[in-house]
Image (cartoon, rainbow, N blue to C red; front, top):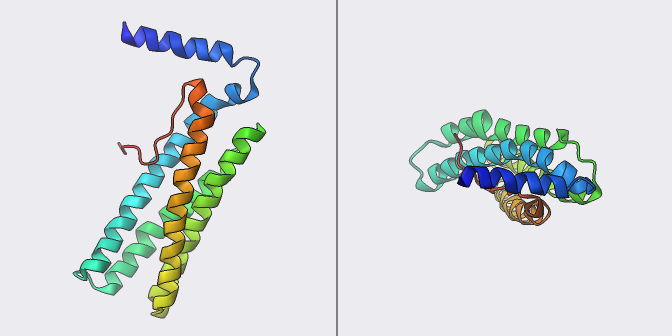
Length: 165
């Protein structure tokens, strides 16, 4: 009964959105962004694991740098690239989506600065990259809040860190 009621509610939302361009695009946009939010969770987990290893100083710097190069950088670059591939038609969602692209661009740039810091043994570059990653986290939080303000009236919701299956 609950499942049938949920389906009816989504059907009603869909019918109401027929004349609304944002409503028509909401389902597709949500479906495109859910995998990216999962990627965001994965890269955040990898980054946190790596930074924990740095602060605990239990892993040699060379191993941490290799993990950054092998795991974190490619995931950050893929998230940035995948977000840029999403085509958004309505201005409302375009503006919101550009915030996600900007956040993941800043994040990827920060990861690259941190990687360069490892190779150049440059603590200032590492700190600069780390600040960019922190800035990108705030940008993603803001994106999720703004995206949900647009999507929720149509029955869709994005999680910043969804459970990864």
